[in-house]
Length: 234
Image 1 (spheres, rainbow, N blue to C red):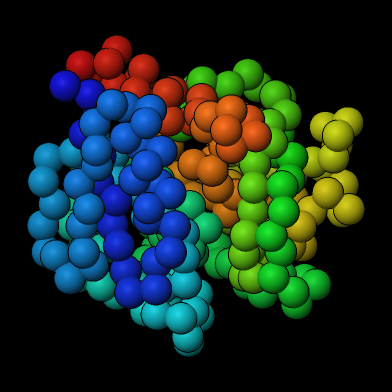
Image 2 (cartoon, rainbow, N blue to C red):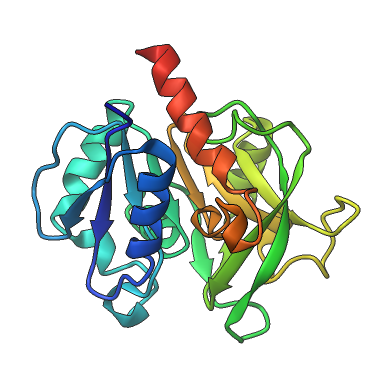
């Protein structure tokens, strides 16, 4: 039957079609598209909050969307162990909703960044990263103006100590340098996990690099890893 997934859409989302296409291509099954005003979700194996500019990024990026009716049930499903993936604006929403710690601020350059970056896989101990090798360097596109991840020292220590940093921005040598960091994120963090490791937020867009026609397939292992893990669990 294929993995059951849902893509949640907010006013201003603009990457939901990319995510819908990627999930359909990888899983063989089109995801359910859920509008932000819904108060329930169908039974699914994966919930995705896609990129975009929900509510025009007014107030703070993701702050208004985080109060949408659908977020209550997403929080409940996450607490029950359902995998939740937030990409770009989805990452911002997860932080604003309290499902992940920290906050995404304006890029250090104060400019919108749209280019390809390199990521180092920092942990394979999650349903999202199990398809990669620890330390593997992958390509991934970014497109954001507010991707500067910040948190307090205690939170950063917890993320490091608990192996909850999923990806870091690196250079071609695999080094986490300031020059390789597109937005100024603390500790070059590109993606993080919740304590239960079933919620991932990341700024880069793996859904935009899943087949050769897009210039590469480095993002595909993320989605295939989720499918493989669910097949094993099932």
